[in-house]
Image (cartoon, rainbow, N blue to C red):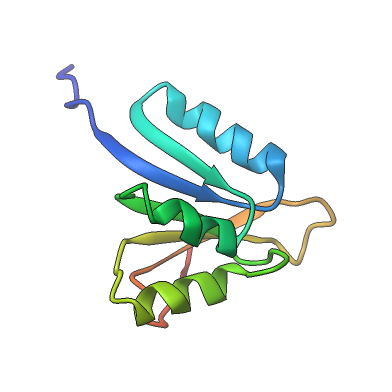
Amino acid sequence: MPRLPKVSGRILIVDDDERQRTALAAMLADGDYETQMAADGLEALERLESFDADVIVTDLVMPRMDGFELLRRLKEQGDLTPAIALTPSAASKRRSPRCTTSRHSGSWRSR
């Protein structure tokens, strides 16, 4: 079976739940990904001043600045870095993320 080429990239992980951030970073560690982490949207904006992310993975529900506001601000700044938004499932008592993608256009697709 042919091997797929190795993919690399820079990923900003934004989530107020440290366990979620750490778990996602650990999953990406096996690949050739450089990751940075932020606990909320404000910290993400600070990180993006010195970290040129290829993609942003963000929770939508966070204190201080949520993922919606983070993506709105990035769009206002002209930053159209692709984003993957994680949301907790309303049907589950424990945090079970659902995933949506956006290019800050205001359109969200549930996965």
